[in-house]
Amino acid sequence: MAVEKTRYLLGEDDIPTHWVNIAADLPEPPLPPLSPATGLPAGPEDLTPIFPMGLIMQEVSSEPMIEIPEEVRNAYALWRPTPLFRAHRLEKLLDTPAHIYYKYEGGSPSGSHKPNTAIPQAYENAQAGIKKLVTETGAGQWGSSLAFACSMFDLECEIFMTGSSYDSKPYRRSMIETFGATVHRSPSNLTETGKANAGSPTGSLGIAISEAVEVAAQDPNANYALGSVLNHVLLHQTIIGQEAMVQMEMAGEEPDVIVGCVGGGSNFAGIAFPFLRRVLAGQANTRFVAAEPAACPTLSRGVYAYDYGDIAGMTPMMPMYTLGHGFVPPELHAGGLRYHGDAPMLCGFVKSGHIEAKAFKQNDTFDAAIKFARTEGIIPAPEPSHAIRAAIEEALAAKEAGEERVILFNLCGHGYFDMQAYDDYLAGNLEDPEFSEADLEAALAALPEAPALT
Ligand SMILES: *Cc1c(COP(=O)(O)O)cnc(C)c1O
Image 1 (cartoon, helix red, strand yellow):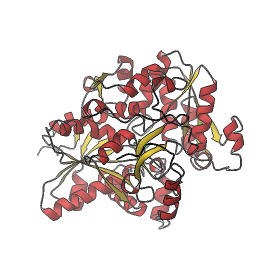
Image 2 (tube, helix red, strand yellow):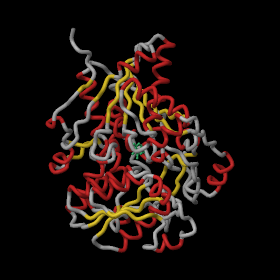
Image 3 (cartoon, protein in one colour):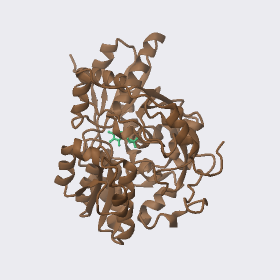
Image 4 (tube, helix red, strand yellow):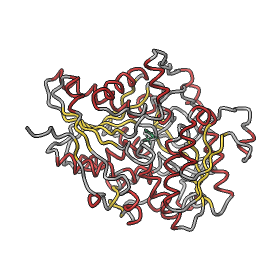
């Protein structure tokens, strides 16, 4: 008997040649970011102190397809194309007529989807003659990805890691150093922001971002790099969805629903936008489900308004669903999903009804992660465990309805550096942090003055 078809594999020649720019599919131009200083639309020239022109042009482009440079495709070949799996054993466990597929991005050099954007960001900066990239990292996923990418293009890399992660995730730090980057515990005594925040020794992403931007802005040979939220980051991730589209064709199936977790929105956009383009063209009616934590429910509970991207109010104001830039989400093991806002491009599609949002409690996502690990053999990161939970609920709804629903989700990273979280869950010590209505109201009261969005 033939072996059950489980993995759908592509070769190097199938690495996409272009990124999909969904901005070209919008009926109207996207709302502009606004300068924090003047409140007026921020243009490309506002970004030149910290980003190279190659990336700025991608950020504002309205071309439908943007060519991927050959050197970037050659670096992608170290781990791409990534496999698409049919989750036969999970389907059996759930006893569902649904067909479940997942795209696995955890086989990359740093174990997540983030090198998909770190590589082209390092490449464009190297092309522009930049010598060093500076960034922040929380859990360490982005820091280790950028450190890897800088080593590919002979760039120096300096990383400000939030104090609490620096102490609790020593092996992510070792990984960053193995790739040749320098890591500072944030708040550091190397920047004005760091010194001013010495009283918050555990640090925060907001402080680390400000430290990194300060260093990059003062050094003409250095630039800053961001791992999510911006248009060019979402653009780079669309290789995930393009590959998945070819692999679903190999499987002879059309996804009815596509699921991903959302922190800033990049891995979700990466798998969803190539399929969404077909929906916008009237060629498909795929549903899209964005999964987020109940303790930081940006898309399900936030307001649609202009807000800053950072706590200090230094970044441009962006049109997005937000819990308020001053909202500090409770500690979660899915550190990558603790962000008060989301990518403006993604938020626009939630607003227009093309994308649904669902929020899940921490213990429910770990229950899903354990089911997945024990059937499929991969221990997922806490972030995509939200997507797994959403996919399982879709499969159970299909069973209820007696439908052969085809579900595709993005497994955007493995959890091998997150075993403390699994320990806590298995010992019954994992909390379900409460979402504070009072904190939300206080943070929303402090939204910046800007034109209202309808
Ligand atoms: C960074 C990260 C996320 C959250 O970022 P998005 O931009 O929403 O994708 C989710 N999962 C993993 C594994 C990450 O590293």
